[in-house]
Image (cartoon, rainbow, N blue to C red; front, side, top):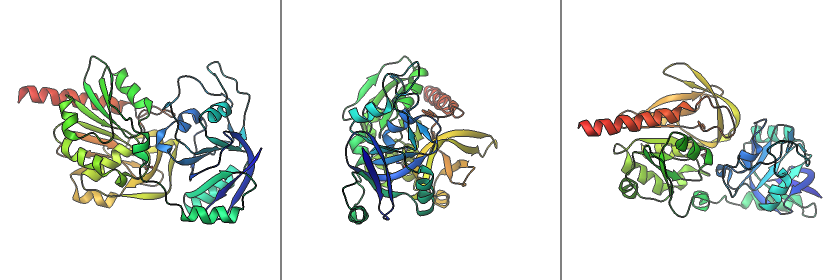
Length: 362
Ligand SMILES: NC(=O)CC[C@H](N)C(=O)O
């Protein structure tokens, strides 16, 4: 069935609908990964966004049991150039289209994704709607311009109740702002005893849980819309080791007095080079973010800049000068993407061990 993508600036892209036959709006963003559509569509950081895949053939290896980053995807649409409805892979269990249909997510295929990506790069991300051909694009575009994006996305995707993934090692309290399963997997692989808690858990409750360390997860939306989490981090700093990823990184920076702002079109892909300032070493990283920590705002904080993006010089990592706390804007859990930055999880475990030893000696 023919469908159209209407952008708030009035641009229209007509293509073939697949997945759910449903009208949905969201912020239209693009991801440059050549593979990884299953992880991307189930990454809750994309809550409320319509994701355009720039790689021209999507769906060819289907959907498998193991690569979900969440059970209930929260993206509002997937846009591709060529959609493959008959996938082939030994792990494949269903097609991308049948999954999107089951989860109520519309897909749109056969549009010029290069043109769309160029538009987004020039104008910045825009609101858009995937809908039938019957509506008047100019009316929809005007409606989209009036629409304000929701500010409660973290609340929508965070777990409602705490749960336990038992292990024999360090107890990590993992604050779920819309956590990718890959983060939990990396902690479990290091024998951590993980308690996953809702985004609005207090610092005192986290300490009461006997945390050896606190992991701040990725998550959707603007970090300034989660003020409770900023207060929670302030209550934890210096009391327990902290490791933040993506939204968790932005929240740690805000908790330390830095500021954040929105990038024009963000970083979403699996091949973003990041330089570690101490060594000059470059990791190729997975990224998915629209906001960034303002470098100038670090001057008045106790945070030190540790990593920068090679492509545009933006902040990619910080560490606290007086407390055991560090964070990165990119994804050491990959999922999907290269695993260059995976040792950061080992660094977190080492930090927890060192703090425990220091406490015993004190
Ligand atoms: N993956 C993430 O955690 C993204 C963080 C934040 N929502 C941003 O877009 O910048």
